[in-house]
Every structure is written in C-alpha cells, then in structure tokens.
Image (cartoon, rainbow, N blue to C red; front, side, top):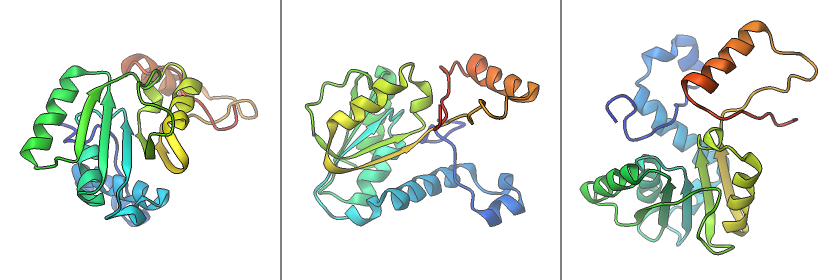
Length: 192
C-alpha cells in the first residue's frame, strides 16, 4: 500500500497529461482516473443507484471494489476475490474503516470459482489476467458467472502479435524482464 495505494494497478493519463509528462500527475489519482475510465467504457457509470451484483476478479486489497461500491451506491453488492488471505483481511479492514458495507471479500481461485452460473450483473477484471496461467479458463469462468446481458469490463496487459513483425531483441528483453522479474505467466495478443 505504501507504494501503490489501495489499487494494485496502473493509472490513466489523457493525451494532455502524457504530453506534459505523465510523472507530473499524482500516481494514486491516476489509478482512480483509470477506474473511472473503465466504468465509462464499460457503461457501468449508468448503473449508479441500481441494485447490481458486481464481481471484482483479482481484487488485491480491494481498492477498486470499495471504489465501485461507493460509486454505484448502497444498493450495489460488490464482491472481490483474490488468492491471498492477507489481501482479503486487509480489504475487509479497509471496508470497515471506510464504512463500505456493500463491499465483501473472499479468498477464491479465479480459475475455479465457487459461484453459481449467472450470478453477477457486472464482472470486472482490472489487471488480473496477466497473472493467470490459463487465460482461456480465466475468461470462461468469468463468462460463466456473468448473467446473460450482463456487463464485462476487463483491462489486462497484452503483447502484440509477433507473427507478422517479429519481436526485436529489445522487445524480447522487455518481455523476459516482465516474465521473470514480475513473475508473470505469458502475455497474449488479441490475434494469437
């Protein structure tokens, strides 16, 4: 939390902020802006005040789950899942401290969720996909628990398709760093 704040994901920087130098923007605010942008892109901002069930897959210490719960209002039920019991404990502590009773947290494997089919109106996944060893199963599980006609919002790290333009040596070094230093499984591209 010291470095990342309550959100263990990167931030959003608009064109002007990038041109001015992204390091001039507060890193923590950039994370909130990223969640706001995801809400807009996913049409979730239209669900404010409605009775919706939200699943946050890979919630970390629950910063985004609590933010969604606050923004969507007291009728919303937000459930965050993570593999880490320590993250769940901290997420629950912060929910109590911040008086967000409509955000709940549980230890659960995103690749083998305990929820019944069609359980959630919104499934949210912010930068958790890159940590999943089985990308196909990850998507299948989220689609399984999403209600028909529900909203799915996901942001994840990807790599470009290298079949047409092979990776340069720098590209390979950068990917190797992410795989080894940050212990990510492989990234995927939309094409391959």
